[in-house]
Image (cartoon, rainbow, N blue to C red; front, side, top):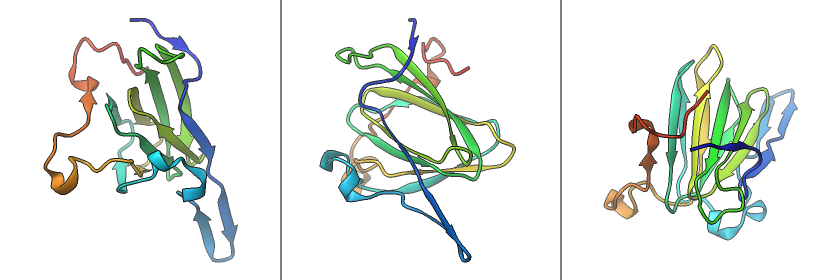
Length: 158
């Protein structure tokens, strides 16, 4: 399967503004007035990724991820449009996000994504998905298609 480099329909990128003063800094991670209601978070978590480590590629059938890459550290985020009905089906987009480029990224269902810590230190990612992991009470199947487990996956990270 070949992919075209370029923008992907439905992906939302938003620069995250860092507000600094004598006390330190503040980042707004989510505002209800800036995100469509169907994308409002249902849970939140932070993950730490060690230098050189890759997470993904994987996708969700129903869940949208609302990632915040703000530092410490930087990631190379690779995204593939795997939605056959999309106008950007089989497009691939790569962007560096994190400390050098604080960014919020909303990834819709059906869009495959992976990120690698490209820095020399452990780096953080915040996520505010619009679905609960494993549903209410953690009693439902996990909405995750893990392409990293498939040795023949077309979703290859450079």
